[in-house]
Image (cartoon, rainbow, N blue to C red; front, side, top):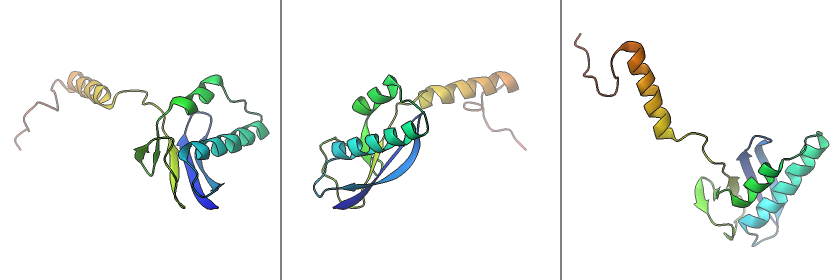
Length: 118
């Protein structure tokens, strides 16, 4: 048996849990064990998991310690399997929107304006 961890930040649940898995277990098996533990925890709190939440587990990208991996990746003792959710907003688009807002508020574009002389 090996000890691994599972971490994610979904709407319904955020956190990290410890998992006991057989030697040679895959990331997909870790996801199944983690999902059943989290669903039991949510059911104990009276929270029902939505269909969207269940679907996110099947298609969401996963990784081990921040490195993307496939679901058939063999785990080692101490690995942390992570389930990622899609970004709500493209970071580049968000940065452009903030810069445009700052430009209209101050009358100058902080990204293209030359530094002011002191």
